[in-house]
Picture 1 (tube, rainbow, N blue to C red):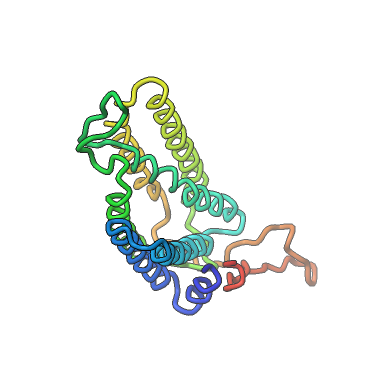
Picture 2: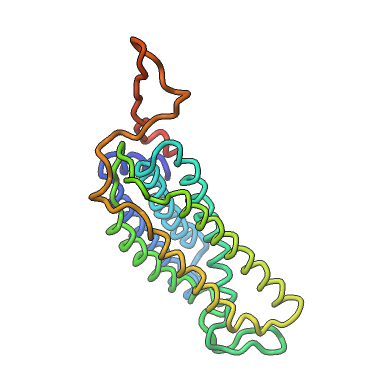
Amino acid sequence: TNVVGGFVFDKLGPRPTMLAGGIMAGLGYIAMCIVLSHHWPPVLAALAWFAVGHGSGWIYISTLFSNLKNFAPQERGPVVGAMACFFGSSAAINVALLNGCIGGQVGADKVCRHGFLGGNVVSYMAMLALVVPCVTVIGAMLTSVHEGHVPAAGDMASTRFNSLLAGALTVVAFICGSNYYAMAVDATIRQWSSIVLVALLSLFIFLPVGASPVDKFTNEVAAPDPKQATKDNGGPVHVPPPALGPHEAV
């Protein structure tokens, strides 16, 4: 899936790739919802889940390499780490939402009644069929690539990366802590833990604060690592950052 998405990314750019991935994933979630509701053969569920995985791979490729192109080489390590961290932790976040019981009641048997999701996989698939394409469309509209350019002074990239790391650790710690508390102490925490989780996730909207506006990006090629620079006629030769081709999407 990543190889095909990489070729599409190189040919059409990040927005079409991201939108196509969102459509594929959304259709896959809709198909999963229908298959599970009607108890159709597992092979149909496998095909639906293939579409979900294929679309998710395209979304991941377009977001990852778009962000790589927008940062200087020395900042690409934290970019990759941040993207991989949140793409991997999204499963834990979604399962925590599935296990929640917003608006319902958790009885003595620890079963959620009349709550949002509350462990209902069909409702969970329906929610993802709506949320994933909507978030993807918003992300695609806000995505722009400025390869070879560097942000203006005062971009505060390191500060935002540190905030991202602190936020990720806070979210993971809350998920682990609330799940343990629900199992060992009081399961009624599930009635409000999902609300707190959504509130924590909403804070990440403010991460772009302090970033350089697009119109203030410099026209200079990002400076390479000094170790990679060579000397010619007594002066340093600046090497532009490498282009990201389809093979690097594997």
